[in-house]
Length: 188
Image (cartoon, rainbow, N blue to C red; front, side, top):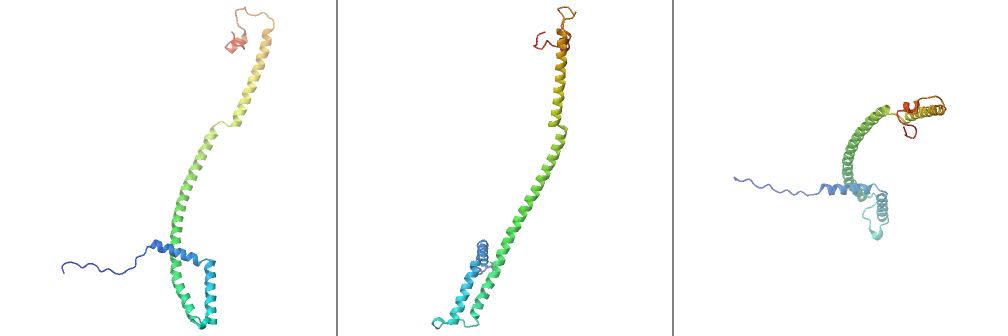
């Protein structure tokens, strides 16, 4: 009396919910096919034909076909819960997929917003950088200035080669002094 009794083992069938769930999904998928409808149609036609004609005098389910109705009722009573179980499992999978899709959408949206900010900052930075057209116009302007300078030097050189009284032989010409270096060929 002072020691408790061991709990009585109740007989409960053990089943794996995952295996049973997969069976329910397979069953529900099969019941939703044209093959199942064709099999059931053939079964009912044979059942009715055998019971109306009575081959070998056997008519186990006469005209109101009560046994066939009982068979359909039993099939429906088992099919409905199996189909509901399959739908519940599909709903759980859909919910997980929905959560994953929502998380992915949130990450994608954050990435898009980040990229939009980056593009906006790049646009601002590019606004401060010289564009190709600006560089081209500046280069054209420098080229024009350089050509004008060369034309001016060409006129000065022609004017310098003309004989005129000028400085003593040791002094350099005005154009080479203004350049700050020797002549065109680099000589002083």
